[in-house]
Image 1 (cartoon, rainbow, N blue to C red):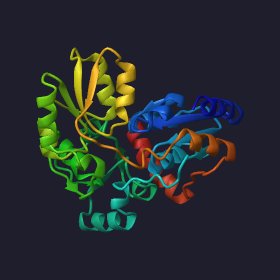
Image 2 (image 1 turned 90 degrees about the horizontal axis):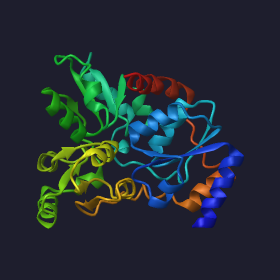
Image 3 (image 1 turned 60 degrees about the horizontal axis):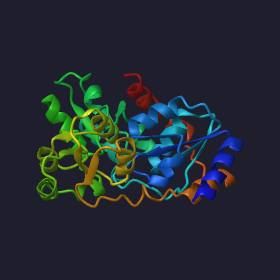
Image 4 (image 1 turned 180 degrees about the horizontal axis):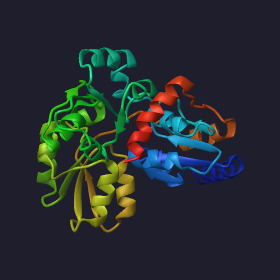
Length: 299
């Protein structure tokens, strides 16, 4: 592993590259990344990156976002088959049909969506900024929220409103149950329970905190608690434990996203060496999708 990390460091210098990794990636990939974060943190970092090449370790829609925000740079992915099942649960055609049923409604998409879907929307949100963004809309404004029904219902509940929700969901978070939380509390009494807002409502209701992965990291750093039960993809445990060695983190259940784990050190090295696979977004789609992303980043 050390030899591969050294090869990556050498190639990174030669290519004038930066490596971005999501919190759900393998621990060894997080360790060699220039920056690790959640979707909001990575979108912000991608928007201002000072490099010729961006290697995006995560799932494909994240690399698409980086490519949209950096039209003059080369964006690489270690594995182009690393998709997002939730993002694939709605197409641009389906969203256009839904908008036709609700003329005048604002279209809001979770950043976990394809570039084509972003291009049909007025603004994007992440799990870390959704409440802040959605507060901007008048309560009487009809809003279409895609593709994650659980994040949408969570924010609607916080703001006391209703959205037209698309029935999409994250298969990994859908595996977490309220019984898992109950059992984890019994095994670790006194531990604080943090879950992701992509979880179902009964799971969110059973938790102490409902946070994005970036929010979980911030909460763990500042909380007086010494033990935490974590209800999201297991990759976040690597960062949480590294940043808080004096605290203990337990997984609420076995939650592993196979797509987030497709980026390996070997694949990071190979994509830097071969400058492939590259991520590109058609100009017409990129221009429209960028408006929705920029609207989010401006807040």
